[in-house]
Amino acid sequence: GESVGLHLPTLSVQEGDNSIINCAYSNSASDYFIWYKQESGKGPQFIIDIRSNMDKRQGQRVTVLLNKTVKHLSLQIAATQPGDSAVYFCAENMRPGRRALTFGSGTRLQVQP
Amino acid sequence: GAGVSQSPSNKVTEKGKDVELRCDPISGHTALYWYRQSLGQGLEFLIYFQGNSAPDKSGLPSDRFSAERTGGSVSTLTIQRTQQEDSAVYLCASSLQPDTQYFGPGTRLTVL
Image (tube, rainbow over all chains, first blue to last red; front, side, top):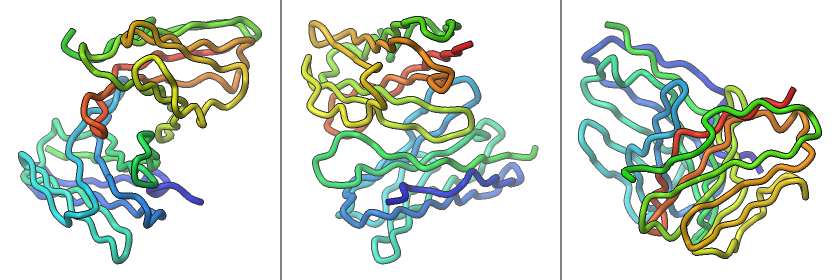
């Protein structure tokens, strides 16, 4: 079936605003989800993860929300900064115990100064 | 080292040649993963190692692709008889915990 995410969209926000990046996942058997940030020419950088027994998890300036009813994952970035500009990927494990991650196609975040 | 390292950072080869890509995981990480990323796309899983064994190699696209890991550390991804569609960024990740994977900078492979 179709993997996580959408064809690469772009989200443009003003510096200081909050950003919300959304991701739809298709496999209800997934029990682990993770967000990565990828800057041009670099490897993905871990941001935050969440297990299916939680619906919210907070990190530094970031919050991940998981809605299993509608199979939706979101990443909220507070007080967005120019350094947050990158492509953001969500990923899922597709089933419990699977170590490989299935990635979406990503969302480009552009922060306007 | 502080993070996952990969070499070379860039590789240009001719169609039909073999290439080897190297990954040095974070010290002490028992699990190692290979992914590839085509231009503007998400990551595609290739193979996963736990120690020196590969319990999941379901993502390898053809028998031209193989990988090994020795000493529970360094891994090599080999692509034989490269084709133009093999051009991509090959990314390695490692993990200590079961889930959180940390990625290296990748090797950009260009097949002419």
